[in-house]
Amino acid sequence: MTLHLPGARGALRAYEPRTEPLALAPGAPFASRTVFAAAHVVADPYADTTPDSPAAVDWDATLAFRRHLWSHGLCVAEAMDTAQRGMGLDWADAAELIRRSAAEARGVGGRIACGVGTDQLTGGPKALPEVRAAYEEQLALVEESGAQAILMASRALAATARGPEDYFTVYGHLLRQAADPVILHWLGPMFDPALDGYWGSADLDAATDTFLQVIAAHPDKVDGIKVSLLDARREVELRRRLPKGVRCYTGDDFHYPELIAGDDHGFSHALLGVFDPLGPLAAQAVRVLDTGDRDGFRALLDPTVELARHLFRAPTRFYKTGVVFLAWLAGHQSHFTMVGGLQSARSLPHLARAYELADRLGLFPDPKRAEDRMRTLLSLYGVTP
Image (tube, rainbow, N blue to C red; front, side, top):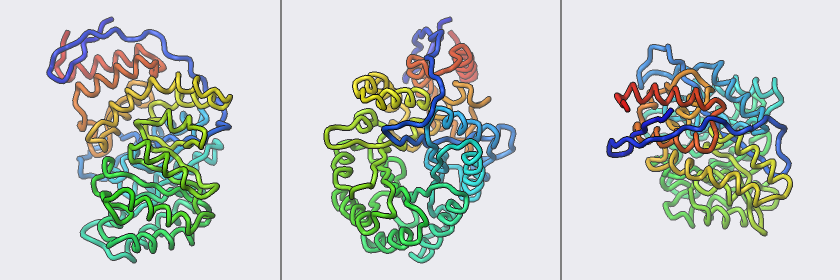
């Protein structure tokens, strides 16, 4: 049956949904690339909460989604930006998420890496020792859980640091005491405006030099870097300057096919929020890449970029709303509710376009269920044919 989807100015357009999904079977981990999907959390829709309340998480549905990702051979990046870290999920809830997900990973043999930050710090500016201690607390918990650590960019450090030397001090201390190699995460201000000027400078060339100096001082403690600047040229230049053995995990949700495919000088691995909704299709593409078929990989993954650019369009930090919306349409959760009430962060026309693009890609295991749920949402908004 035809759906009538609203555009930006209220006009309705007719859309004929797919009737058959893509055949995307589970499979083993990949040979040629390490690929993390940053996973969202599922809210408890029955909890009596407000946007200011602590998060109420549906743990069963949240862990089931991680098992879905692992079943397709993907690694899971836990308690990251995609999980609404700092946008509905506070440190207490993130800590519980890390404990539960790490235990689940051990049970199914899945690989997991978890975000280490400083979001337990609240209030005004903090002294540098307080920032370091907050990082240490979170690093200890992640290591005790048996997960790999991802040292995330810190709002508190960005607010406190007076220049590159403060970043050398904090990161040098953390890397020296880390039990195992970590992933360093550089999240750009398009994802979080509070991180503007990270690494001691708003000049990205200067910031890159500082970032590389931190890595060069401790190459044995850095498994890789995760770069989320939405600048493919800069990422390619950066990965060519990394010490031998340090990986580049692309976090570029606009240019990931070309960055993962690589060139004659190298390639990026991946740690991507967009692989939450794209997981099975992305996994199939990487398996093609495992055979050495870069053209086949691009043929599968290039068509997904339009959806990714739509989900991550400015204000980019609200991409989580589209991710959770697509998880609801795909049947990974029974509702479209988010912690912090973030389901209201994108408009109906935005969501309608996300549905259309995802449906064209065949991402919904049950297209009829997705159509029915989209129809329900349209009705709630007062849209009638």
